[in-house]
Image (cartoon, rainbow, N blue to C red; front, side):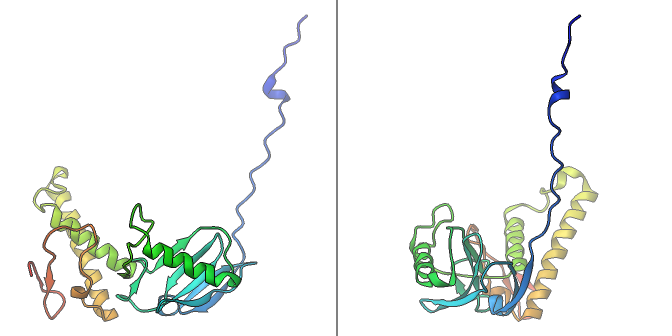
Length: 208
């Protein structure tokens, strides 16, 4: 009589997966983005504010360190979003000189694969403005009568209505925030004529 062993039966059962436990954080008020509360993980030091050749920023530590803009929308920074992470390892309030030099090297480095600024800072804008100008650039590149037309007249109209509504909402928010769309300009990748806006901020006029 032969004995057949079930190889799966003799293996030890896999341990049950550990449930995700979010890290313990504390809220710290900073001047990031003109005044924001940042969540700091347990064991990490409080953020610090430094100046890099005339540009103030907030440094948050953890997984390297991250930089947050202090000055308002449209001011120059080393990121068009007002945020840049430097996952270089280490990073603490005792290494501010090293951090400042790392930022300077990033600014000076050639803008290849997003790893440098070519020596030039750029205006930063809130996320909704970056989305607005990217959507507007899309509209200017893609003929309205053809884009999304493959889904039929009803879906075509629905897509462009959604597009127009989101652009109008962004313009309204800019008005609330005191930002003139003419001060924003096109995204870096845009080639062509960028539209101008009339005094009421809603009357768009194509061309210079």
